[in-house]
Image 1: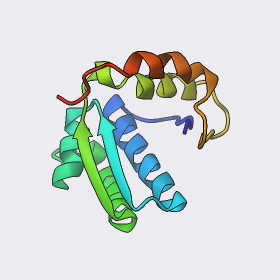
Image 2: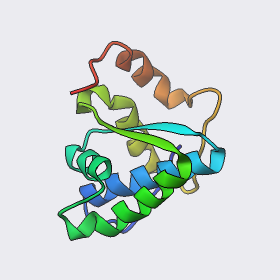
Image 3: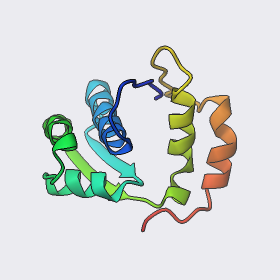
Length: 125
């Protein structure tokens, strides 16, 4: 999924919003179990523990946790940036889209080289 988000205050807020958007998508599609991966240790920790010490993401966090409860089983995992190149490529791609794009069966062509290079990367830190 690629969706352009504008007027976001910080990279941390953007990452937290991306998690919430992903959870909303999973809820709408009906996924009963979701693994959320992020290279932001702070975002993962906040969602996993259910609390944040930063006011800038607290409301986003609470919204996301409410959606996560509706989804079912949601696990949050921190991954190294090098193990997250597909997500980074999608976020860069999303900067140039005007409407939300969703891919179910086959990945979009721009993502294929990143998927191939990501196959052998160590991801969990």
